[in-house]
Image (tube, rainbow, N blue to C red; front, side, top):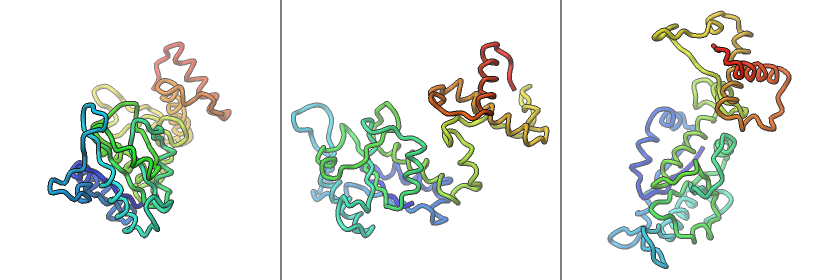
Length: 258
């Protein structure tokens, strides 16, 4: 996965990319990411990359020209034929964008094109950037942040971990929340008892089929209790219907579980 982050605040981004799984992905050659300071593409001595909004109002607006110049430079680096070419995928984190999902993370992970994240700040980005580039606008939630750096990192992190070889065990991504529109089952580790709370007996039974059924049922339980919307219109198989019915009956009768 190749990507770049265009930002006014590179120190918000670079330290995160140098940690944990993101760092290891780069060391393995599975992630190539550059962080470019938009002030490098300004020409006045103050490195001005924002200005007052036309029409008045509070705050500042990020200027279009430094962003367009930065993208042109990146396109040249990536060998794209021209600015805005389909060879480069341009993403703007924005509360006005479509919601970021696991499927969208997969789309980023599998995309062979370089991905450029343009991070807005202040009151936003000059509208002419959108008009010139037609970027994808993607939202990480129905709230407003101080800038696009954190959402860009969220998207990179969510995508990179789906690339084969990034995680120690590729099956980790197939069993986790949202991998098949269900939340994940609970996890336990040593010791077997913590402050009177014991690990479910089934998990230490050694019976792999019972463990599989327990995990599936608990995934359905978590989804039913926390995100029932994920179950609407979902075509469940016979086993899932039976397990979900048990979950619903237990919930109604307040039968203790686990």
